[in-house]
Amino acid sequence: MRIKEGAKPNYNLNGFNVLILFTALFAIAQLVYPFSSTSALSLLIFAFILFTYLLIKGNTNDLFIFLFFTSIMRIVLPNNFREVSLFFPVLIGSVIIAKNSAKFLSIKKLYFNSVLFLLLLFFFAISFQLFYHVQLPGFLGSQTGNTGFLNRWNLINNIIVFASIFLGFNINVLNYLIERINTFYIFVFAISMLMLLFGVNKIPLFNTFSWTVVVENESSKKMIIAGAASIMLLCYQLAFKRRTIFWLGSLVLILMGVALSGSRTAFLSYFLLALFGFLIYHRFMVRGILVLFLSSGIIAALLLSPVVLLIPEKYQRLFVIFPSEFYTGELAQLKASAAAKSSSFRYEMWAKAFEKIKQHPFMGEGIGIPKAQYDLTAEGMAAFQKIDSKVLIEDFMNSGSLHNTFVSIAYIFGIPALVLFLAFIFTLFLKTYRLTQIYSGELKAVYGFFTLVILNYLIQTFISDIHNSMEFYVFMAVIIKTVLLAPKLAEEKEGSLT
Image 1: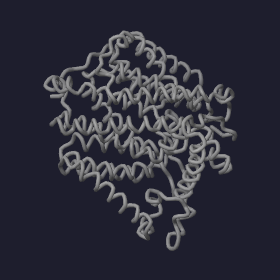
Image 2 (image 1 turned 30 degrees about the horizontal axis):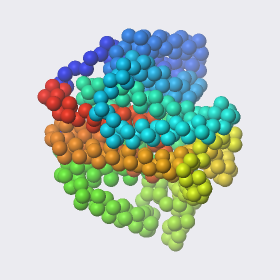
Image 3 (image 1 turned 180 degrees about the vertical axis):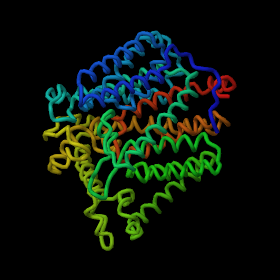
Image 4 (image 1 turned 90 degrees about the horizontal axis):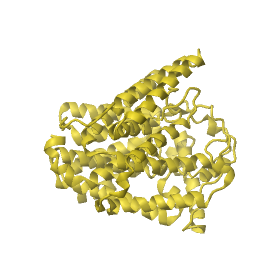
């Protein structure tokens, strides 16, 4: 199933084309920087002139498309100045808000439906906590990395970007946007696979951690962006493509990409999303939930059985998801694996977080100040492997990165904020699923795609911090707006989606 072109979106410059040129200038600047910093600076000046021209001359559609993809690309300046990726989105987001400020005065009652209201309450909760727990040295920043300031700034950015995309998203760019999302992730997938196959561990153009092949040891590697791109392509294939032999081949190719990525989250998401995509397609929701729970139990039992030892060592990290103490008897050799140690690290951190949550259940602990000195020039996990485990756990807790969204929110902001977050994401999930049952054809595919995207984030919540992810808020803004405008989208089906 495929979204057809329909009515063309209204652009002055087309933000996606500007983004390609902008990224190309940055890429060339990165290449020439080691030989001539002056030439690199000239290219960056041209890039910023183009960016400024977009801000002044671009209409809301141009700015929205540019912002959407910039938010998930994480472009960096030469010499790996990673934090620049935090400032582009909030700058262009502020311009979108300014150009659409009149909309604040005429927001329809429709927009205050339960989903948006719950998210706004959550934003209020985290905004209050960010400043209630301010510790000035952390707020002002330091040279240690992962500072209180950067974490606070990232969360504030997320709120601004969400507001700007929610205001700037027009329904007439929906089909164009989804097609470009697919194009974007095909590019990311292809580049990531080439890096993994040819042993290229780093692309200087992008955020070093996201685009780096993280080497845990000789037999354990992972690439976060490769897994994320694979899953987004899977969601698109499940929602929009016809079930043919070529479709089946694409699913196999994506599975190979997931395996090469070494991402345990992506590996788990692949099978659950494929199963749930089938259930949505055949309207088996209630039975589907039972099947998902049963499947999860069977998978857990298999992962704690000797079957894991039959898997080649190169791919074992995908199946080792429990902490070291779970592996006894025949599985004792897995105790020392990087994957098992990583799981143990998380479980220990969560256990300490639960004790703190009991002490401050309503107000949370807030974001503190890391104590260790980190080598921000080190690649992959090297910056963290140099730090004592106990100090590292304390610093992760200080920065609020507990690798579990539910635990992190309860620990940093308190249980009330967690309740609001859970109510929001499950309400939105049920709303998008319900719309897949109401509509058929292309509209069913659109809401099916968004349902799978939300489910993927729900899976990620158990082992990552999606509340810190700008990409999460970018997608949430688009999905909420599309859900709220479902009746209008149905009315314009013949014009914009057919």
